[in-house]
Length: 372
Image 1 (cartoon, rainbow, N blue to C red):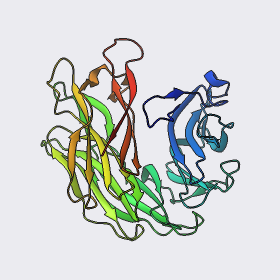
Image 2: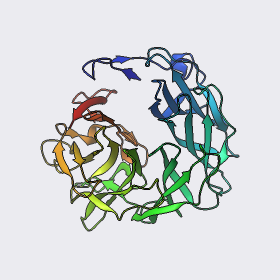
Image 3: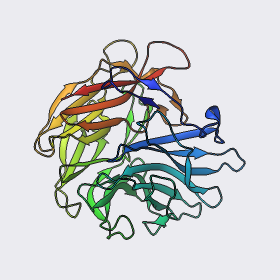
Protein backbone atom coordinates (compact mmCIF):
# COMPACT_ATOMS: atom_id res chain seq x y z
CA UNK A 1 0.00 0.00 0.00
CA UNK A 2 1.02 3.67 -0.24
CA UNK A 3 0.43 6.73 1.95
CA UNK A 4 0.54 10.41 1.00
CA UNK A 5 0.70 13.30 3.46
CA UNK A 6 0.84 16.11 0.90
CA UNK A 7 -2.48 15.71 -0.93
CA UNK A 8 -1.12 13.10 -3.31
CA UNK A 9 1.96 14.96 -4.56
CA UNK A 10 4.29 12.27 -3.19
CA UNK A 11 3.69 8.76 -1.88
CA UNK A 12 5.48 6.35 0.43
CA UNK A 13 5.00 2.64 -0.16
CA UNK A 14 4.86 0.11 2.66
CA UNK A 15 3.99 -3.55 3.08
CA UNK A 16 1.25 -4.73 5.41
CA UNK A 17 3.27 -6.70 7.99
CA UNK A 18 2.77 -10.39 8.66
CA UNK A 19 0.33 -10.84 5.79
CA UNK A 20 1.99 -11.97 2.55
CA UNK A 21 5.06 -14.20 2.68
CA UNK A 22 7.17 -11.39 1.25
CA UNK A 23 6.29 -9.34 4.36
CA UNK A 24 6.84 -12.09 6.92
CA UNK A 25 3.34 -13.53 6.77
CA UNK A 26 1.98 -17.00 6.01
CA UNK A 27 0.07 -16.30 2.79
CA UNK A 28 1.66 -16.90 -0.64
CA UNK A 29 -1.04 -14.84 -2.38
CA UNK A 30 -3.04 -11.80 -1.23
CA UNK A 31 -5.76 -10.29 -3.41
CA UNK A 32 -8.91 -8.15 -3.46
CA UNK A 33 -7.66 -5.50 -1.04
CA UNK A 34 -10.17 -2.94 0.21
CA UNK A 35 -9.47 0.15 2.35
CA UNK A 36 -11.72 2.23 4.60
CA UNK A 37 -11.03 4.98 7.16
CA UNK A 38 -13.08 5.62 10.29
CA UNK A 39 -14.11 8.93 11.90
CA UNK A 40 -11.19 8.67 14.35
CA UNK A 41 -8.80 8.31 11.38
CA UNK A 42 -8.16 4.62 12.00
CA UNK A 43 -7.40 3.00 8.65
CA UNK A 44 -8.45 -0.55 7.80
CA UNK A 45 -7.46 -2.80 4.92
CA UNK A 46 -9.36 -6.00 4.18
CA UNK A 47 -8.10 -8.69 1.84
CA UNK A 48 -8.58 -12.19 0.51
CA UNK A 49 -5.57 -14.29 1.53
CA UNK A 50 -4.82 -17.70 0.04
CA UNK A 51 -2.90 -20.43 1.80
CA UNK A 52 -0.71 -23.02 0.15
CA UNK A 53 -2.38 -26.30 -0.77
CA UNK A 54 -3.43 -28.80 -1.51
CA UNK A 55 -6.18 -27.98 -1.01
CA UNK A 56 -5.68 -24.25 -1.26
CA UNK A 57 -7.31 -22.43 1.64
CA UNK A 58 -9.00 -19.05 1.75
CA UNK A 59 -9.09 -16.43 4.50
CA UNK A 60 -10.75 -13.04 4.90
CA UNK A 61 -8.32 -10.85 6.85
CA UNK A 62 -8.34 -7.25 8.10
CA UNK A 63 -5.36 -5.11 9.17
CA UNK A 64 -5.68 -1.81 11.07
CA UNK A 65 -3.52 1.30 11.51
CA UNK A 66 -4.01 3.91 14.25
CA UNK A 67 -1.35 6.34 12.98
CA UNK A 68 -2.47 7.23 9.49
CA UNK A 69 -1.00 4.24 7.72
CA UNK A 70 2.60 4.39 8.96
CA UNK A 71 2.32 1.37 11.25
CA UNK A 72 0.00 -1.61 10.93
CA UNK A 73 -1.06 -4.37 13.28
CA UNK A 74 -1.00 -8.03 12.36
CA UNK A 75 -3.90 -9.15 10.16
CA UNK A 76 -6.90 -10.58 11.98
CA UNK A 77 -8.67 -13.55 10.39
CA UNK A 78 -12.40 -12.86 10.04
CA UNK A 79 -13.29 -16.11 8.24
CA UNK A 80 -11.51 -19.04 6.63
CA UNK A 81 -12.49 -22.00 4.48
CA UNK A 82 -11.08 -24.57 2.09
CA UNK A 83 -12.52 -26.90 -0.53
CA UNK A 84 -14.58 -29.01 -0.48
CA UNK A 85 -16.37 -26.99 2.19
CA UNK A 86 -16.33 -23.55 0.56
CA UNK A 87 -14.42 -20.97 -1.46
CA UNK A 88 -14.30 -17.34 -0.28
CA UNK A 89 -14.07 -14.35 -2.63
CA UNK A 90 -14.18 -10.57 -3.00
CA UNK A 91 -14.36 -9.08 0.50
CA UNK A 92 -15.17 -5.43 1.06
CA UNK A 93 -15.05 -3.51 4.33
CA UNK A 94 -16.57 -0.32 5.70
CA UNK A 95 -15.54 1.72 8.72
CA UNK A 96 -18.74 3.11 10.22
CA UNK A 97 -18.56 6.87 9.50
CA UNK A 98 -20.50 7.79 12.64
CA UNK A 99 -19.14 5.30 15.19
CA UNK A 100 -15.40 5.14 15.85
CA UNK A 101 -13.99 1.65 16.21
CA UNK A 102 -16.83 -0.10 14.40
CA UNK A 103 -15.98 -1.74 11.07
CA UNK A 104 -17.95 -4.15 8.90
CA UNK A 105 -16.88 -6.83 6.43
CA UNK A 106 -18.86 -8.66 3.74
CA UNK A 107 -17.76 -11.32 1.24
CA UNK A 108 -18.97 -14.08 -1.06
CA UNK A 109 -18.94 -17.65 0.18
CA UNK A 110 -19.27 -20.30 -2.53
CA UNK A 111 -20.09 -23.76 -1.24
CA UNK A 112 -19.17 -26.47 -3.71
CA UNK A 113 -22.62 -28.01 -3.32
CA UNK A 114 -24.12 -24.91 -4.93
CA UNK A 115 -25.00 -23.11 -1.70
CA UNK A 116 -23.72 -19.68 -2.71
CA UNK A 117 -24.04 -17.19 0.16
CA UNK A 118 -23.13 -13.69 1.31
CA UNK A 119 -21.29 -13.63 4.64
CA UNK A 120 -20.98 -10.70 7.05
CA UNK A 121 -19.09 -9.86 10.25
CA UNK A 122 -18.63 -6.82 12.49
CA UNK A 123 -15.96 -5.51 14.83
CA UNK A 124 -16.54 -2.96 17.60
CA UNK A 125 -12.92 -2.74 18.78
CA UNK A 126 -11.03 -1.35 15.77
CA UNK A 127 -10.79 -4.75 14.07
CA UNK A 128 -9.15 -6.60 16.97
CA UNK A 129 -12.00 -9.11 17.28
CA UNK A 130 -14.93 -9.97 15.04
CA UNK A 131 -18.38 -11.47 15.39
CA UNK A 132 -18.86 -14.97 14.03
CA UNK A 133 -19.64 -14.81 10.30
CA UNK A 134 -23.38 -14.50 9.66
CA UNK A 135 -25.18 -15.50 6.47
CA UNK A 136 -27.11 -12.70 4.75
CA UNK A 137 -28.55 -14.75 1.87
CA UNK A 138 -30.08 -18.24 2.03
CA UNK A 139 -27.79 -19.76 -0.58
CA UNK A 140 -28.97 -22.04 -3.33
CA UNK A 141 -28.16 -21.75 -7.02
CA UNK A 142 -28.29 -17.94 -7.13
CA UNK A 143 -24.81 -16.40 -7.39
CA UNK A 144 -24.24 -13.18 -5.44
CA UNK A 145 -21.04 -11.19 -5.96
CA UNK A 146 -19.37 -7.78 -5.74
CA UNK A 147 -20.87 -6.89 -2.37
CA UNK A 148 -20.19 -3.32 -1.25
CA UNK A 149 -21.20 -1.83 2.09
CA UNK A 150 -22.59 1.71 2.45
CA UNK A 151 -23.76 3.92 5.31
CA UNK A 152 -25.88 6.68 3.74
CA UNK A 153 -27.03 7.95 7.14
CA UNK A 154 -26.36 7.26 10.82
CA UNK A 155 -27.83 3.92 11.82
CA UNK A 156 -28.38 2.66 8.26
CA UNK A 157 -26.16 0.00 6.69
CA UNK A 158 -26.60 -1.21 3.11
CA UNK A 159 -25.05 -4.06 1.15
CA UNK A 160 -25.21 -3.47 -2.62
CA UNK A 161 -24.51 -6.53 -4.79
CA UNK A 162 -24.89 -8.22 -8.17
CA UNK A 163 -26.94 -11.40 -8.41
CA UNK A 164 -27.80 -13.90 -11.13
CA UNK A 165 -28.67 -17.50 -11.94
CA UNK A 166 -25.92 -17.78 -13.06
CA UNK A 167 -24.07 -14.46 -12.95
CA UNK A 168 -22.38 -15.09 -16.29
CA UNK A 169 -22.08 -13.45 -19.71
CA UNK A 170 -25.24 -13.56 -21.84
CA UNK A 171 -27.47 -14.00 -18.81
CA UNK A 172 -29.57 -11.48 -16.90
CA UNK A 173 -28.37 -10.11 -13.59
CA UNK A 174 -29.89 -7.91 -10.93
CA UNK A 175 -28.51 -5.13 -8.78
CA UNK A 176 -29.78 -5.83 -5.27
CA UNK A 177 -29.62 -4.15 -1.87
CA UNK A 178 -29.86 -5.49 1.67
CA UNK A 179 -30.67 -3.05 4.49
CA UNK A 180 -29.93 -3.11 8.23
CA UNK A 181 -30.80 -0.59 10.94
CA UNK A 182 -29.10 -2.36 13.86
CA UNK A 183 -25.47 -2.54 12.78
CA UNK A 184 -25.85 -5.70 10.74
CA UNK A 185 -27.51 -7.87 13.39
CA UNK A 186 -30.66 -8.24 11.29
CA UNK A 187 -31.41 -7.44 7.66
CA UNK A 188 -34.58 -6.61 5.74
CA UNK A 189 -35.58 -8.55 2.64
CA UNK A 190 -33.52 -7.61 -0.43
CA UNK A 191 -34.66 -4.83 -2.76
CA UNK A 192 -34.01 -5.01 -6.51
CA UNK A 193 -32.55 -1.80 -7.92
CA UNK A 194 -32.45 -2.83 -11.59
CA UNK A 195 -31.94 -5.72 -13.99
CA UNK A 196 -29.12 -5.72 -16.51
CA UNK A 197 -27.51 -7.86 -19.20
CA UNK A 198 -24.30 -9.47 -17.94
CA UNK A 199 -21.75 -8.60 -20.62
CA UNK A 200 -17.99 -8.52 -21.05
CA UNK A 201 -15.70 -5.95 -22.65
CA UNK A 202 -14.03 -7.10 -25.88
CA UNK A 203 -11.13 -6.00 -28.06
CA UNK A 204 -12.81 -4.23 -31.03
CA UNK A 205 -10.20 -5.53 -33.48
CA UNK A 206 -9.86 -9.18 -32.50
CA UNK A 207 -13.11 -9.76 -30.64
CA UNK A 208 -11.20 -11.42 -27.80
CA UNK A 209 -12.33 -10.71 -24.26
CA UNK A 210 -10.93 -8.15 -21.83
CA UNK A 211 -11.03 -8.90 -18.10
CA UNK A 212 -13.99 -6.67 -17.23
CA UNK A 213 -17.32 -8.22 -16.34
CA UNK A 214 -20.81 -6.76 -16.20
CA UNK A 215 -21.17 -8.19 -12.71
CA UNK A 216 -18.78 -5.48 -11.46
CA UNK A 217 -21.51 -3.49 -9.68
CA UNK A 218 -20.28 -0.45 -7.73
CA UNK A 219 -21.81 1.78 -5.05
CA UNK A 220 -21.26 4.95 -3.02
CA UNK A 221 -23.01 6.98 -0.33
CA UNK A 222 -22.91 10.49 1.09
CA UNK A 223 -25.05 13.51 1.94
CA UNK A 224 -27.96 11.22 2.81
CA UNK A 225 -27.98 9.47 -0.57
CA UNK A 226 -26.93 6.01 -1.72
CA UNK A 227 -25.97 5.19 -5.31
CA UNK A 228 -25.38 2.06 -7.38
CA UNK A 229 -23.71 1.78 -10.78
CA UNK A 230 -23.17 -0.91 -13.42
CA UNK A 231 -22.33 -1.24 -17.12
CA UNK A 232 -23.60 -3.08 -20.19
CA UNK A 233 -21.63 -3.62 -23.40
CA UNK A 234 -24.17 -4.94 -25.88
CA UNK A 235 -23.32 -6.55 -29.20
CA UNK A 236 -25.50 -4.09 -31.12
CA UNK A 237 -23.02 -1.36 -30.18
CA UNK A 238 -25.22 0.29 -27.56
CA UNK A 239 -23.02 0.38 -24.48
CA UNK A 240 -23.66 2.32 -21.30
CA UNK A 241 -22.86 2.87 -17.66
CA UNK A 242 -26.01 3.26 -15.57
CA UNK A 243 -26.62 4.70 -12.12
CA UNK A 244 -29.52 4.69 -9.69
CA UNK A 245 -29.97 6.63 -6.46
CA UNK A 246 -31.86 6.34 -3.19
CA UNK A 247 -32.70 9.19 -0.82
CA UNK A 248 -34.62 7.12 1.75
CA UNK A 249 -31.90 4.88 3.13
CA UNK A 250 -32.08 2.25 0.41
CA UNK A 251 -35.80 1.48 0.63
CA UNK A 252 -36.59 2.73 -2.89
CA UNK A 253 -34.39 3.53 -5.88
CA UNK A 254 -34.72 5.78 -8.91
CA UNK A 255 -35.05 4.49 -12.45
CA UNK A 256 -31.69 3.79 -14.07
CA UNK A 257 -30.10 6.86 -15.66
CA UNK A 258 -27.13 6.80 -18.09
CA UNK A 259 -23.79 8.14 -16.92
CA UNK A 260 -22.44 7.60 -20.43
CA UNK A 261 -23.88 5.98 -23.56
CA UNK A 262 -21.53 5.26 -26.46
CA UNK A 263 -20.25 2.51 -28.73
CA UNK A 264 -16.75 2.71 -27.20
CA UNK A 265 -17.50 0.12 -24.49
CA UNK A 266 -17.24 2.06 -21.21
CA UNK A 267 -16.19 -0.30 -18.42
CA UNK A 268 -15.02 -0.54 -14.80
CA UNK A 269 -17.06 2.35 -13.36
CA UNK A 270 -16.34 3.64 -9.85
CA UNK A 271 -18.51 6.04 -7.82
CA UNK A 272 -17.97 8.41 -4.87
CA UNK A 273 -19.78 11.30 -3.20
CA UNK A 274 -17.96 14.59 -2.60
CA UNK A 275 -18.17 16.82 0.45
CA UNK A 276 -20.52 19.16 -1.41
CA UNK A 277 -22.93 16.31 -2.18
CA UNK A 278 -22.00 15.94 -5.84
CA UNK A 279 -21.74 12.45 -7.29
CA UNK A 280 -18.43 11.63 -8.99
CA UNK A 281 -17.47 8.79 -11.31
CA UNK A 282 -14.50 7.41 -13.19
CA UNK A 283 -14.41 4.75 -15.91
CA UNK A 284 -12.36 3.48 -18.82
CA UNK A 285 -13.44 3.33 -22.45
CA UNK A 286 -12.06 2.46 -25.88
CA UNK A 287 -12.85 5.61 -27.87
CA UNK A 288 -9.07 5.96 -28.41
CA UNK A 289 -8.69 2.37 -29.63
CA UNK A 290 -7.07 3.48 -32.90
CA UNK A 291 -5.00 6.35 -31.48
CA UNK A 292 -1.61 4.73 -31.96
CA UNK A 293 -0.19 1.23 -31.66
CA UNK A 294 -2.00 -1.22 -29.44
CA UNK A 295 -5.46 -0.78 -27.94
CA UNK A 296 -5.79 2.84 -26.85
CA UNK A 297 -7.68 3.02 -23.54
CA UNK A 298 -8.27 6.12 -21.41
CA UNK A 299 -9.68 7.01 -18.02
CA UNK A 300 -12.61 9.42 -17.93
CA UNK A 301 -14.24 11.27 -15.05
CA UNK A 302 -17.56 13.01 -14.56
CA UNK A 303 -19.52 14.84 -11.87
CA UNK A 304 -23.24 15.19 -11.31
CA UNK A 305 -24.98 17.85 -9.22
CA UNK A 306 -28.46 16.33 -9.62
CA UNK A 307 -27.98 12.81 -8.25
CA UNK A 308 -26.96 11.21 -11.53
CA UNK A 309 -29.58 12.64 -13.88
CA UNK A 310 -27.04 14.73 -15.83
CA UNK A 311 -23.24 14.60 -15.95
CA UNK A 312 -20.23 16.76 -16.84
CA UNK A 313 -17.55 14.43 -18.28
CA UNK A 314 -13.85 15.08 -18.84
CA UNK A 315 -10.79 13.10 -19.87
CA UNK A 316 -8.64 12.38 -16.81
CA UNK A 317 -5.52 10.81 -18.34
CA UNK A 318 -3.80 10.12 -21.64
CA UNK A 319 -4.54 6.87 -23.51
CA UNK A 320 -2.51 3.75 -22.73
CA UNK A 321 -2.23 0.40 -24.49
CA UNK A 322 -4.56 -2.05 -22.77
CA UNK A 323 -3.07 -4.97 -24.71
CA UNK A 324 0.18 -4.42 -22.78
CA UNK A 325 -1.54 -5.38 -19.51
CA UNK A 326 -0.92 -8.79 -17.92
CA UNK A 327 -3.32 -11.41 -19.25
CA UNK A 328 -5.66 -13.21 -16.87
CA UNK A 329 -6.01 -16.79 -18.06
CA UNK A 330 -9.25 -17.24 -19.96
CA UNK A 331 -10.43 -13.64 -19.62
CA UNK A 332 -7.86 -11.38 -21.33
CA UNK A 333 -5.87 -8.22 -20.43
CA UNK A 334 -6.37 -7.36 -16.76
CA UNK A 335 -5.99 -3.99 -14.99
CA UNK A 336 -8.01 -4.90 -11.91
CA UNK A 337 -11.57 -5.72 -10.89
CA UNK A 338 -12.05 -2.25 -9.39
CA UNK A 339 -10.35 1.14 -9.15
CA UNK A 340 -10.33 3.71 -6.32
CA UNK A 341 -12.32 6.94 -5.99
CA UNK A 342 -13.02 9.04 -2.88
CA UNK A 343 -14.88 12.28 -2.33
CA UNK A 344 -12.93 15.24 -0.94
CA UNK A 345 -14.29 18.37 0.77
CA UNK A 346 -14.09 19.92 -2.69
CA UNK A 347 -13.68 17.48 -5.55
CA UNK A 348 -12.52 13.89 -5.89
CA UNK A 349 -9.34 11.80 -5.81
CA UNK A 350 -8.81 8.74 -8.00
CA UNK A 351 -6.29 5.88 -7.84
CA UNK A 352 -6.28 3.75 -10.96
CA UNK A 353 -4.20 1.36 -13.04
CA UNK A 354 -2.64 2.04 -16.43
CA UNK A 355 -0.02 0.27 -18.49
CA UNK A 356 3.47 1.60 -19.11
CA UNK A 357 5.49 1.70 -22.31
CA UNK A 358 8.14 -0.59 -20.81
CA UNK A 359 7.95 -4.20 -21.97
CA UNK A 360 8.97 -5.60 -18.60
CA UNK A 361 7.24 -7.86 -16.06
CA UNK A 362 6.02 -4.65 -14.36
CA UNK A 363 3.84 -3.50 -17.24
CA UNK A 364 1.30 -1.67 -15.08
CA UNK A 365 1.45 1.13 -12.55
CA UNK A 366 -0.95 2.82 -10.15
CA UNK A 367 -1.61 6.48 -10.93
CA UNK A 368 -3.27 9.21 -8.85
CA UNK A 369 -5.32 12.18 -10.01
CA UNK A 370 -7.67 14.78 -8.56
CA UNK A 371 -10.59 16.46 -10.28
CA UNK A 372 -13.49 18.78 -9.43
